[in-house]
Amino acid sequence: MRTSTRRSRRPGWRGTAVAGLAGLGVGEVVAAAGGTSLIDTVGRAAVDWSPRPAVERAVELFGSRDKAAIRIGVGVAAIGAASALAGLPASVRAPAVATLSAATAALALRRPPRSWATTIAAAASSAVATAVGLRRAPASVRSEVTTALVAGGALLAARALLARRHRQHRRIIEGAAQSRQTSAMPDDGAEPLPGLTPVITPIDDFYVTDVNLGAPLIDPGQWRLAVTGLVARPHQLSLTELCSQADEFDAVMVCIHNPVGGHRVGNGRWLGVPLRAVLERADPAVRATTLVTRAVDGFTASLPVQPLRSGEWSGYVAIGLNGKPLPAAHGFPARVFVPGIYGQYTGVKWLTELELVAGPHTDYWSPRGWPHAPAWITPHARIDIPANEARADRSVTIAGVAWAPPHGVGGVEVRSDDRPWQSADLACALAPSSWRRWRTTLDLAAGVHTIQARALSLSGEWQDGSMRPSFPLGASGWHAITIYVSQ
Ligand SMILES: Nc1nc2c(c(=O)[nH]1)N[C@H]1C(S)=C(S)[C@@H](COP(=O)(O)O)O[C@H]1N2
Ligand SMILES: [Mo]
Image (cartoon, rainbow, N blue to C red; front, side, top):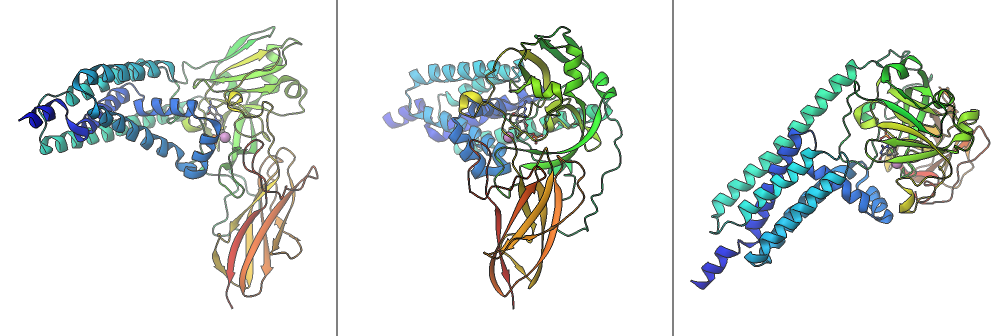
């Protein structure tokens, strides 16, 4: 008798876990109706609060699936937190749930996209979790399973709703003013080889790295780029105005987290307005030494003004990629990009403001221990074929890509084991900041071989062979693969 009374007060971890799942499901549906996601908002907070080594570890562990991993982590944590409540006496449980939901709602209001939809979603989520979890009578297994299934269905429905939003936004983007036709996709003269990376990275293969779980969706009609701060002529630019002044340029975008031989790098045919022209129009004061690039997601990256004004560095407000407007994931409607500088320093996606300030500025990554000054990309060669641990014939074609922006690739060398380096044939360079495809053939004896490649920049810098991790200046080392040569 007593046991059953206690069980009716404490629903057990399974009951509260189901309650957590139900809350999550309802919260996600409400948020999706407002075009956001509660899970993604909490995930963003987790990214913001993670110490640098934890971020690095996650990137290493999950690679391009980092965002999916964070989403799953948030979901599991929410359900875990709910089931932990089962251990609390009924009198404490309600205030605990209330505190948790107030905290989530506050967090939703403070994190980008700072939307009421996520705040209402947080409230709805906890109301449902409370209603389900604080039921007096213990639920039957059958009703718990049903609730769990409905909640799971709600989570899927919310994802589908959000995906629809993204599709609608893509249609808006395609109709946007800057969908200017670019010249035909370039040809670098390289012979096609199965497995060799294309000279221009298709958008669907272009890596995506940022601190958000979902890309912000910006209405191009409402959007303006504000040029502010220490300038004689503060002004605003619309997408149409930017489009009319844009030029095409080919360049690699590289994430500082790209490991040696990794794929957090893409070569794009971009469309952009030179930053120099934008700055001249604003006429910065002499004491304006720093250009702060600001974005809707609260991310900032700042660049020194002088080399951008003198033309020593060529930077752009980019609005197009591969003949199309920038996709949402890559910063629609505009981003700042200085070819040669690593992604996290080169300027922001989803740009809203260019502010000129005197003296240094603390950017998103600076309090997390990353060096303050922009880090430059060093020469790198990646071997694409053969694949690591592949079987090969005695005469084997080795091919890949190499980059050394902003100077360009002057050479690539390949060697097997400790034999002398031999130079590879280079395809044409589309532009100094673009990557260059390369290939060569090695004649090898039967057995296991290590193949390495290294790049030389046109400024005379050899790829550094010493192995260093991404932090603090980008990874270094020579890309090496193992191959098995048969008799
Ligand atoms: N607004 C904003 N811009 C951003 C980031 C971000 O988190 N927010 N991440 C930067 C980083 S770390 C990189 S590597 C590049 C990646 O650009 P891509 O996703 O188009 O490849 O965007 C940069 N710009
Ligand atoms: Mo990055």
